Amino acid sequence: MDEWMALAGTAASFEDLDDAEGPLIIGGPPPPLGPPAIARAPMIIDTDAGGDPDDAVALVVAARTVPELALVVTSDEYDGERARFVRWLLDLAGRPDVRVVAGSDVGNRRGFVVGGMCPADVPRQDPDVVGVIEEVCAGIEGRIRWVGLGPLSNLAHVQREEPLLIPRFVVTQMGGAINYRDPSRAEHNFRVDPEAAIRMVPELGLWSPTFVLSDVTFNPAMEITRESALYQRWGRPDAHPWERVLREHFDRWMAKYPSMQHDSLTLAAAMLWPGVRFDRENVVLDDIARMSLAADGTEISMSTSADYTAFMRWLTEALS
Image (cartoon, rainbow, N blue to C red; front, side, top):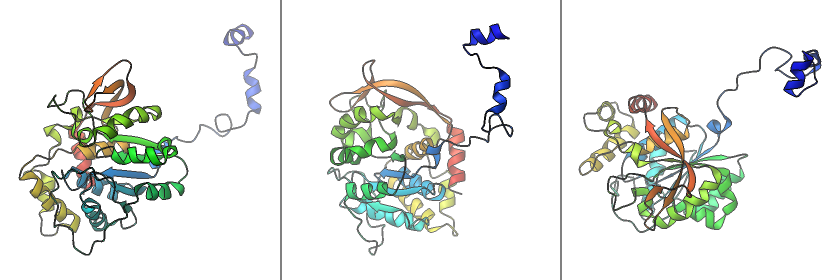
């Protein structure tokens, strides 16, 4: 016994442990660990809601299943109308407690399809992005989940004005692609504000960001169509008000485009749903924000695959 303990590098005897305190020794096994603390941390969602309705779906899921949702910031703003739409949708989903702030407007005027849907009496939202984020964060201890569903403009704004806030964010960002379907362009969220993406990917690399790439999200297995059970449910006579909004939103968007649930999958990843798989890789962005692998690039956690059938089941349950 003495020889074994000498090899193990300790001279302590097992009898000495009888005097040790703590649940590992006295009182049986330790309590269950449960989910990690970040799974219960406050959440900020950064969204370009009002275009592809996958943002609106993700917002409703968060409103219904994330009690810690504290703030929604809009990006790629359209004269403040995205923020008004978000305010209205959150109210219909039973979350008037969640603050909304009208975020960065980069001058893009394409793809906004919810014009005229929001009632006139829904007020314009506070445009002081950094001030509101700072105020919300001041009342929170520990780290905060930042779920990016649009361009990285607001994160870049925060990084310029209040850089000490960035380390507090556990960032899960929808965006980027290694093998984008149009190799001449960057993925949409990076393309809308390439300067912000180029600035923030290396900056976020200091704090272990997670990126849910278009390589994984652009998959017809996650498409909601007019034949989908969810879409059919939203058209029932007894549909909830937020369901009727989603139905009209999809009708407007699907007149021209498909809607795959990029953003709800990103939200699921931020909620630690286990069906998205990630690898740690090093990436760089070129001068138009196209992403590629590079040994000397920024290390990120990058999505590589997802269980689409399980995800659609999870999404349906979250919206039921």
